[in-house]
Structures are given as structure tokens and as C-alpha cells.
Amino acid sequence: MRLLLAISLLLTQHILAQCDLKLSQKAPLDSLFIKLTCDKTDTTKVKIGVLISQAYIEIGAYDSALYYAEAAIALSEKIGYKSGIISTYFQKGVYFEAIDNHIKAIELFNIASKKAQSDGNFVKLAQCYNNIGNNYMNMAQYDKSIEYFNLSLKIREQLKDDKGIARVYNNIGNVYLSQSNYKIALDYFLKSMVIKEKLNVKPELINAYHNMGAVYLEMRDYDKSINYFRKSLNISNESKNATKAGNAATALATVKQIMLQYDSAFYFYRIADRLYAVNNNKTQLDLFYRNYGDLYLSTNKPDSAIFYFNKALSCVRTSKNSSNQCDLYNALAKMYNKQRRYEIAIAYLDSAVVLLKNFSAPRLLMNAYGEYAISHEGLGDYKKAYSYHVKFKNQNDSIYNLENSKELSSLKTQYEVDKKAAELSAKAEAEKLAQKAIDGKEQIIKNIIIVSIAIILIVVIIFTYITFMRLRTTRKQKSIIEIQKLLVDEKQKEILDSIHYAKRIQDSLLPTEKYIERKLKEQRKN
Image (cartoon, rainbow, N blue to C red):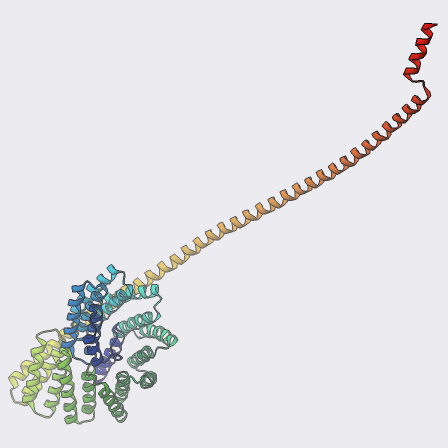
């Protein structure tokens, strides 16, 4: 029982830590109300309303959280504020998730996701898918949970949102942890932790180390579990985050309690108690006090155990967590049976059974029947005692058969998940090969283009060279011709000059035409 309660506490802490809910530690309620009063812009009022709702969830004031979430929805729809409508429906889903009404939470996250998809708000769409996955995980519908976490992961990878990717890895790890598949859970937690260490965002690192501690606790590797919880505690103290430090101290107390090191367990519980008191944080005090009471029960201090069980009951009534409330009624009944105060034990069991009519919790009902049998036997009403013993046995047999059926279903689910993973891996490999083939074809085409360009360049160079050489030869031949022409012209001139010279000599030796004509005329007269 101690181990189951311890794991329940740790899982609750680190599952809630990875929901896409921005708590308002940096925006105290007083300052938010001042802003709400002073600001006259409707869109800002919607945003502040969401922050107030978140802040009330953090301190466990769930009625107020719902009131402001619904008021923000009404205002955002009235003014047609699309982004506000998405955020407010998302916030209302967070409220129902906080009070463990997972079906209603999923319904609201689906409304928000459809509006986010229609508006192209992929950041909020990824957050919706993440929170839907968380709720399916809390309902033990692990195949649906993985489906939505993968949808969220795909969007976050496209957005290159490392912080969001780390959160989804963590949540997938939680799914496998819930199914006791520690190896795969550890792989995803390690992936998440590596990214968070790289980002060095302290709140994220606190969650990462806490989750690693939780999975090592499940694996019974207590030394590693303590090491990671101490890391979480140290960073929480450095960051002055009392709530996270309280969670880490509670986790360390839980490990020490399981190891039967009760003095150390008391030491860390006292530290956690002081830390939770700093912020008056009530959201996790029910399980904290429940485990603290169980520690007193283990050390044979029933009065102290009853005191802390009642403190836990006070917290759980505020949080409206019926399952935890029934568990505490059973625990108190068990304590009073040990003290032989059977009437008080029966009164608590009656309260548990009334609550169990509103939801299904076979194991809690079985425990109630078992304590009823002890109470009536102690009062000497053996007929009723026998009747409850029979109910206890029938309920136990029913749970045994149901768990066997769930185990087979879980194996089938695991097979389907592994099969789907193998299919995705095969598709990815095929896509990789296809991409390689495409890349190879593209490379061949590139090579052909390069070779073609090279050949064209060579042809152009050769053609240019030939043209240049031809031009050079032509110019040379033209030069020779011009020289030869000059020589011919020069020879021709020399010849003409000689002819002219001879003609002048001839002309000088021969009588002129006028002389000859005169002489001829003279001869005719004679």
C-alpha cells in the first residue's frame, strides 16, 4: 500500500507538471484583480480572467477558477475575440482536468482544438492535443493518449519548439511508465532531460529530474532515484520555488519510507510541510498528508496517523477529488478498527460507499467491504460480518478477472503501439530510400547539366580559337598582298619613269612635228 500511494503521489506531481498550463506564480491574485479593475480593454480582461482562473487552480480554489473561466468565455464570445475563445475553452478544460473530470476536460479541449485549427493557431492546437493526451493517460486509455501526444509532437517539431518537444517526450514517457514499461519510459525521459538541460530553463529541469527520480523509484533503483530527486530539490531551492521544492522533498521522503528509513522519511516530510506552507499550496497536500499519515501508521503512531489523514481529508474535500476522498475514508476506517472504535469506522465506510455510487472504483469498494467485515465482527454482528466477507471475496474475484482482462488488453495495446511504431519506422525508411533515389536522380541530372555546359564551353573556346587563327591568317595574307602591291606599284612607276625618260631623249634627238611640217611645205613649193 505504501508503495502504491507513493507512486500515485509522484505520478500526479510530474504528470501535472507537464500539462500546458502556465501557472501564475509571477502574477499574484491581488495584482491580477487590480489589473482587471483598472484595465478597460475587453481583450485584456479576457486574458486576465484566464490568469485568475489559473491562479485559483494552483491554490485549489476550484469553484472560483470555474467562475472566472466561464466569465472569460462569455466575454470573448461577446466581442468575437477568436484567440480569447480558444484560450478560455482551453482554460475551462484545465479546470475539469484538475478536478479529475477527464471526459468533460477532453470535450472542452476538443472544442478549443477545432477553433485553434480553424484559426491557424498551431501553438494552441499542439497544447490542446497534449492535454487531451494527458487526460486519456489518466483514464488509462494509453493508445489514445499516445495518438494525441504524437499529434502534438508533430506540430511542435514543425514549429521547432524544443521546450514543447521535451514536454511531449516526457508525457509519452509517463504513458509507458504507467504501463510499467520502464525501459521505454526511461528512454523518453532521457530525451526530454537532454533537451531541457540544453535549454537550461530551471522549472523544466526541475520537472525532468523529478521524472527521472520517479521512474528509477519504479525500477527499485533507490540510489539513482534519490540522486535525481536531490537534483530537483536543489534547483527548486535555488529558484526559490517552494512548491516544486516541496514536491522533491516529499519524493525523497517517499523513497526513504519505502526503504524503511523512517527517521530520514520524517525529516524530508517536515521539510516538505514547511515548503508547502510558504505558498499555502493545497493542490497536492491531500496526497502529501495521506502519505505522511501512512508513515505514522507504519511506525505505530495511530493518533498522529489519524490527525494527518483528517488533514488530508480536509484538503481533498476542497479539491473535489472523490477517489482520494474514498481512499481516505477507508484509511480512517482502518485506523479506527485497529483502535476498536468500530462505530466511527463504520461511519467513515458509509461515507465512502455513498461516494462510490457516483463513480466506478472496484478496489476502493473491495477495501470498504473488507473493513466493514472487520467492524461488524468487532461489534459481534457475525451475520453482517460474513455478508461483507462474501462481498469482499466476490469483489476481489471480479477485480482479479478484470485485471487479467486489462493485462491482455494492455498487451494487445502494446502490440498495436509497437506495430504502429514499426510501420512508421518502415515508412520513414522507405521515405528515406525514396528521397535518396530522388537525390540520386537529381545528382545525375546535375552532372549531365554540368558536363553539357563544360562541352559547350570547350566547343565555344575551340570555335573562338579557330576563328581567331583564321582572322590572324587573313590579316597576315592581307599584309603580304598589300606589300606585294606596293612592290608592283613601285616597279610600275620605275618602268613608266624609264619610258618617259627614253621618250624625252627621243624627243630631244628627233625634229619636232612643226619642223618637219615646215620642211615639207618648203619642198612642195620647190
